[in-house]
Image (tube, rainbow, N blue to C red; front, top):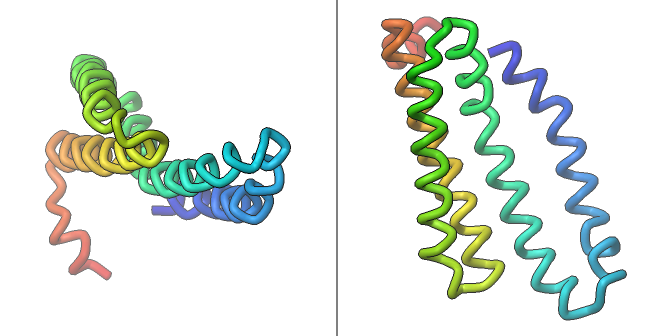
Length: 130
């Protein structure tokens, strides 16, 4: 949990800065690009914030030398990401942002399940410990 807090301590101010100044930066490329791009940028920030537990879980799997499991999750990630992007592509940048959020939620859940399974941890017991 400490590593999770440390990552968010760095990530949240960076995301806030992007939210505050993203529109200004995108407006350099044109008004139309800015308005549609800002919605996509906000959705990407949401997906990045969702992805942090998954990234930490991946690092834990690497430490545990669960290379085969990590490979299978990465393979699933590629297939899932491409499939969601193709599925939502017709909705434009909004659809791609939605695909990114859905992907991060699903793959983070997969990573968390893998960690709990490989470590014989029960997430409900962890919640009761506090």
